[in-house]
Amino acid sequence: MNKQTPRFVVVQDEETVKKLSGLNAAVANMPFDPFYGAQDVIIVLAKKECTYVYDGSLAMGNLMNAAWSMGIDSRWIHRAKEVFDSEEGKQLLNKWGIEEDVEGIGFCILGYAAEEKEKTEIKDGRVFFVS
Ligand SMILES: Cc1cc2nc3c(=O)[nH]c(=O)nc-3n(C[C@H](O)[C@H](O)[C@H](O)COP(=O)(O)O)c2cc1C
Picture 1 (cartoon, rainbow, N blue to C red):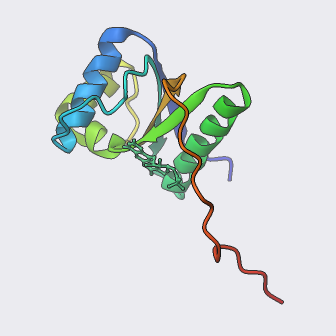
Picture 2 (cartoon, rainbow, N blue to C red):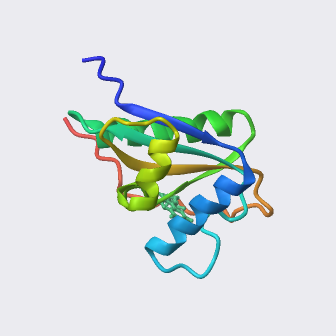
């Protein structure tokens, strides 16, 4: 249907990254930086139409795959919905000129991991071959 519901906000300035991290931490009362010190963040929002949550989620996944293909580490950071449902979040959207009815889908943090993540075991039984 060519709805193109996802919206992307690229944040690279330190002050705004800090502000977003603070708003994110406040949602779940987190005592640490939920962005793990990342300096580059792409916020994915989606205009509330049709399959927008799935659209935005797919955009998040594609961003992460694209980052990986370029040798850049990334992680999906949650609570974008709550951040942009809040008064302060709405003020930011307004400041950025996003006036549509959007929902926060995720924060894609980008950077280089300080240490390599332990390889996780892939669980069996998740794929069903049927006939
Ligand atoms: C919807 C979603 C939200 C996530 N939110 C966070 C988060 O807030 N903080 C975080 O450190 N990782 C977050 N992650 C990453 C997961 O904790 C986990 O590391 C990642 O999904 C790895 O997938 P696995 O569990 O299949 O190994 C999120 C992932 C998804 C898909």
